[in-house]
Image (cartoon, rainbow, N blue to C red; front, side, top):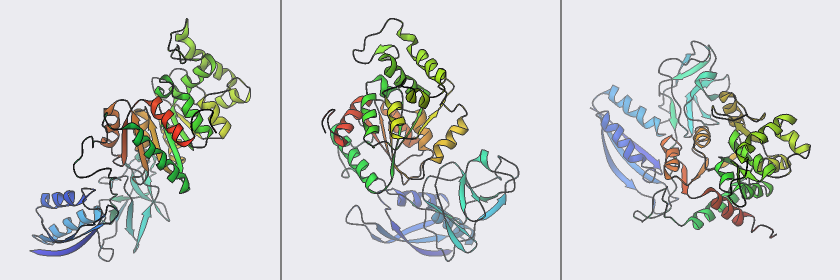
Length: 408
């Protein structure tokens, strides 16, 4: 029998980390006993747990230490160095490569710990001469050293946000019955705190923003400086431009919700007119496009990434139709992002969520509860959900951050 006593510190209970750790050790056939437990009396205080581990032999203890290290509880003095294997070809990782999470990660190599930044899930860890980086499988180059196995890699658990007591009604992150106004006020406070910290607010939005009548509110938020980046698809831009040129979205008047004669082709005419001048920016500069979300982003110099999909009409000349190029464009702008607000978008919301580290706050807003929960199911566990109409959310948030329209 081989025994070891370790001290674990952090948000062990609210993150469910202790339970997960004990389950993984039990799966290995390794005994674990809590000897001393000091639980933080306030939510911001960490807990400290002294754990006695009993393993059948040194190999089992090594496996247990690997589990501890994977959750950020390795001993720097005893930690093994990572194992590096050269990539066999462009776009191919070695077998058993380490697959990243979105949690803060560090790597033990050449006698020191290296922080990995920026952090991204579903990548490999590649040594690039003077640092470790998250690299997508398709972007690794032959002969680059890649981390294989889990030895020498530590991740840091991130505490889950807590909004209530142990038992409350409507405590789900995707409840349709929660008080929306209070939650939106909390989002507004988070926006203010993000800017106060010198970080950017990234918005990811779907075409329902325009269809539900929320385009004006989003444009107001852009104009007031509360949108630092906008990631979306061809559809939102098309229907925003359609509304600016024809007063319709999907052929229906946005002011009255009445169908218009021949309105079914307005979005195609909008695409055609933008293609005729070459770009959205050119349409704005020429005075063809004078209002809307896209026009306001152009006025404010807000970076916009339009990531295309197979179902796009047109598309607009600004739409990036190579999905990997679109992913690279999105990733390139994340350096200063501290908060991400996703509104009425499943495809682009999950795509961007996969690019964000767990330390970036995420708010997912959708009328469909399953869309809100799906983001967490895909690994963005730090995301908080709000089930409500896109236009309602945007108008209330704009009121909280800016004030009522026309009031200064």
